Every structure is written in C-alpha cells, then in structure tokens.
Length: 607
Image (cartoon, helix red, strand yellow):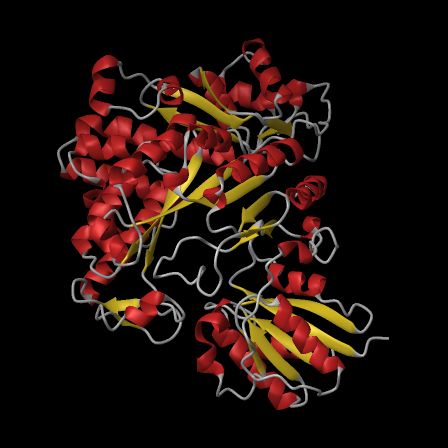
C-alpha cells in the first residue's frame, strides 16, 4: 500500500511527435521509493482548459503535484495550480523545469507553489519525496538548492524500465548527454553546470533495439551539440545504422566541428541536422559570446551538401548590435548555403541568461513576460523588427512549406536579385493574397507575378516547372506504397474500377521532366538555350527505396487522370478512344507497383 501519491504534470504546446513527458518519466524512473510512493504521469496541451486539467488531476487524489514548467506553458500551469489550491489547500504543489531555473524568483510570492526546483530535477525530487514520507521532518526551503548528478548512469532508462512505452508515441525525445561546452549569451543551457556528461553506449544500444522493435517513426535527440565528441558521435551513428536503420533521427550539431567522415556518416543515416547559425555578422555574434568564421562555416556546410545530408539552419533577428540590413545579409548568407529548411526567430531575452543580465547594457527593450521577445534596440527599431517578422513568415511559407531549397537560387539568379529581395517582395505579395492557403498555388501565382513584373517571362515556364517538380517530389517523399501488403487479384481488369494510390503524383511539364530529375541546381538561362520546349507527362512516386520519375505518353497520362472512382477501365478507354492492348502493359506496371488499386467495392462491369 502506497503511503504517498504524486502526480507529475506535463503540458505540451500541441499534440505532436515531440509531445512526450520525458522529464517526468525520468523522475518517476529515478525515484527510489517504489513501494511507498505512487507516481502518476498526466499530459495536457495548451488548448486544454486549466479548469479541466485541474479536475483531471484532482480525480487522481494526489498528496502532491509536480509541474514541468517551460516558457510556453507557464501561464497554463500557474492558472491550473491556482484552481487546485482553491479546491484543496492541503495538496503540496511543486514546479521545476527550464522556466523555474530561469525565473524562480518571479514565483516566490505565488503561494500556490510550495516548492520550486531549479536545474536538474532528480536529486531535489527525491529530497522532496523523503520529506513527504517523513511527515514533515527537516522542511526544505521553498526554493530548493540546485544539485545535479555527476554520473548519469545512476539514472535508469524510462524506456527500458517501461515508464515510457516507445510504441505509444508518434515520436520520441531521446537524451544521450547533458550539458553544453558553449556559453552563448542568449541561452541558459550551460549555466550552473560545467562540462558534458554522457550516458553509456550499451544503454543507448539497448534503447535503439527497443525503438526499432516498437516501430518508432522518429526520434529527436536532445543533445545541444551532438558532435561535440567526434568519436562518440561516429560510434552512436554506427549503433543507429546497426540497430535502428528505419527510424528518422533529428540532431543538433555544430557546423564548425564537421569533417568529411562525419558528413559522410550523417548522409548514410535516415536523419536531419539542425545547425544554429543565428547570424552571419561576426561583430553581432561577438556580442552574444559566439565566434564565427564565414568562410570556414561555408566549407563545413559544403561537406553536407557534397554528401547529400539533410540539414536546416537557424537565424535570430534582433540580436544586440544587429540591424535589419544585417539580418538581410544573414538571410542571404544562410540561403546560399542551400539548407533544406531555414528557421527564423525573433530574439527572446530569457530570464536566467547572460543576455538578460546585459539587456540594460545593450539598451534592449523586451517584453517582461512570455515570450520575452525583443521590442527594439538602438540599432533595430520596432518597425524594422516587425518587417523582419513578416519576412521570416514569408520564408517559412515559400522556402520551408514550399520545399523550394532545390530551386530557389536558380530563380533568384535569373531574376537578377538576391534571396532577401525575393522574400521582401513575397512578403508584400502575401498582404493581398492571404486568402490562398495552398502553398503550391501561392508559389505558382507569385512566380507568375514576379517574372512578369521584371520582364523575365521568357524564363517563367522553367521556373514553374521547377516549382511543380519539387512540390510533387516532396509530396511523393512522404507517401510510400506498402509493397508488402497483399492486393486483391482482379481477373477481369478491363471491367475494374481503379483508383490512383495517394502515393502516385502526376504532373504536366513544359520541358522533358527527366531533365529536372537528373540535374541538380539548374542555370535557367543555359537550360533554355540547350533544350527545346516539349510538353512532358510524368508519374512521380516513392517505391519504398527512392523517388522515381517516369515520363509517359499523353494518352497514358489521360488514362491515369481519369482513375477517380468514377469509371471502370473499359469506360475510360472508351471515352479516350484507346484500345486495351495499347495500355495493357502500362496497367500491369501500375498494378505491380500498387500505384493503382481496385475500388474497395470490388469489380464492376460498367459505370
């Protein structure tokens, strides 16, 4: 019989593959009082009502409640705590997490919180449980002393101990180490704890085996600099390839630490890399304790492009000393590295960071509550910050959502402008076209607009082809045909109603589609000089191993386009005046690859 019950509460931004209560599960796994303390995990999301969350928590009849508090869920948890205390003042409430570590003093006067835990939570959590079990002996201070474990091997795996079942989640957060050797002023990752501590590789191997067995789709590695130790990074990559080859991993890395071996190894893995560029302005980065060599950075990123590794870059606008001109230069620099995606953020000056302490020195004006975003600086007016925010939004739509990494530079080159100018124009274009929510249609419309505006219509057809091809390619990338699944054998194919698989993408192009599939970044002017325009009809699909692009005759394309659950194959052929013998081999090809499937209702003679 348990003598104490505690509920550990996590509140996530949205229901996503990263919405997993890892921190709470680690505390549950680590605490030693298994026979005396019952630990229950509860998850909520920001669109939940605090009143409803409080009701769910109170139904557990807890003796104590612990909140995992971050910048994004602080208001939600503060309101939830108030409701719980109003209902039952005898319940002890404590809170930990990044927001408490950064700004615990701001909650000292909030009587709804009995204890505040800064830093890593394992040791303080155990000390609280010991106090609860001893019924009031040696009452701790409200603000618990910071402490952490030097040896991470003392923390059992919440996955291997079944406190988190990997198969129950869309994705997993995975901790391989703690600590960061860098001291960026805008980040608190390295404050209070020196050096980097690691979990051992045998534990990592066993977790990987479990993840693969449970068919986990994606894993987000929490290490702030995965490649800080090259040999360890290579060893873990090898473990992943041997034990979890089917899982997609996301790593945060430092570009300056890359070499040929690491770049090639990342490229062999099913993974994406996130790299914090933040700015290309050397003097601006000095203000936040970061060194930067633009030439070296480009050389290292070039290794990722050379081997075909997937990577993204981060930019921050509004850093001390930055200007909107500096941000535009950083945007150009970043896009010329050809990242697969580019994430851009307005600077937030978080409590607990060095930059928070230096804000007055730099004369930075910022919001005094979540999200602590910069409002203005001597060099960056509020008007310019708002302009930058709109440009950042334009980049997210056209570049990230629009998957334009593979062709954007071809377009800006033929237009005779730099990428930042392109996105300034696109952000203005969005003002009058906000009703269009389809990214591909929005891109198409803008390309038509800007090529006509700059009198470059001779090159428009190739730009539109590139846009369409990469859109279909990216759609196919995430639509895999299940080749292992049995398909009903139809004996009377000609009288069957077929429908296209969602994995099959089709498109009509102004030039031979094979040019786009076979070439890398295209010089549009040279391309048009070297190739004749000819209408091209294409199938683009994921065969489970690679994306295939198949050019087909117009009449075959028309047959596929009519496969919409409306007509049998015989009816389609009759409408198009085509003999079955002319499409028999093609239909067999589509059926074999499961790119078309019989309508669920079965075979129908005519319709």
